[in-house]
Image (tube, rainbow, N blue to C red; front, side, top):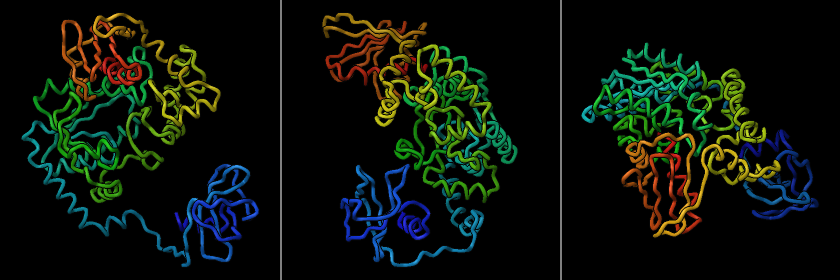
Amino acid sequence: MYYGIKLLVDEELAPYVMVSRSIGIDDLLYPSDYYGELPNETKWIPLKIKNRPLYGLGKLTDNDRIRVVKLWRLTDKMYFNPLKREITDAVKANIDYLNAIEEEAISFLKGIDRYGTVLINVSGGKDSTAAAQLGVLAGYRKALFLDTGLEFPETIETIEKLVDKLGLELIRIDVGDTFWKALNTYGPPARDYRWCCKIIKFRFLARVLKKKFDKIVSIVGQRRYESTARLLAGRLAPSGSTAFDYLAAPIQNWTSLEVFMYLLYRDLPINPLYMMGYERIGCYLCPTSRLAEIDAVRKTHEKLWRRWYNYLYGFAREHGLPREWVDYDFWRWRFSYPGEIRVFIKRLGLKSTDLLVKIMSDVASISVEADLEYGLCKTLYLHNIIAIDLDKYLRYLKITGLNGVKRNGYVEIVFEDDKVRVFSNGKIELCIRDEKKLKRIIERAAPMIYDQ
């Protein structure tokens, strides 16, 4: 931030250097070109050009040299508005706007019941709360809450307050200890192995709801700014899960600020977790959580987190994994680590491949067999599999964009010139000409078996 750098320099709030000569972008500054204090814990350093209204940002290289990354001119004095403003002031100033986006969302929701029974999905988060209010204003009352057994107590309280305020007819599905029991089969969930969503969410939802309703349209708090996938999703679109037929997103185009203002405008309950530093509300041990949120759980809900970490340390001991696998949250990946994580693991004196192999040793074994058409085929035997429902597996495959054909006792998936056969007993035959594609194909085909 331009004025942020100016403030750091002018108020001497952080280490910075005064540059004694003219400079430009990408210039390399030697110690003789500047004077001042260098930072200890970062490579980035603010720059001020002596006797000129120029500020910049530099990056430290070796031998205390600095590469000029940014440079700009700031001649005016900084002005800070002394008036203190609250978000409630923003609400008052934008009532007409909030009414307009509310009317537009209600108009969108009216008539979606022609696609099926409308259920308002409540989760205790800000987005689903706003969507629930809009759903009620559009004339819908049936609501759904799935208690995964991994919810924050604040989330449960927020949902109870919302149900009372809006007069919702709540269908509550409680899965109990299903997650903790399933750990014995699947191991810890991961960013690239989210079996938990299928086991404790979609499976229970489908099992309960499909007995009650034929077609279901779920009103959700989905917003386009949350992820690329949600940006590309339609505002009313077929659901990717087997629990719902359609998803309706009335606040698809709303910003986070608009959501918070709307909650205050309509006096709706706000989950107190947001005031504790949480950005998203969901299962407290979700592997997709940011490290900052994982750290927040450690501090604000120590008892909950201790139960999860005791399990992880036990899993690590059983599989010969080092404590770092738990301490640095490497458990959040199952099949492969991102590049920056691999670098960090190496810095700790560990091998990322060793960690992954030790996790997988409890899941699968592999052998090589002959195939008349393809030559050698690799055969993967998945452990803890008694029987695979091939019809279910076919449905789940569609979520990944893969197409399979059910044969006598197995499902065949064709990848370009290669093919994979998934048998009902947990055996997978991978007949692949190019070994480089093996890992990618396993990552797409195998997890869907456990996701049943």
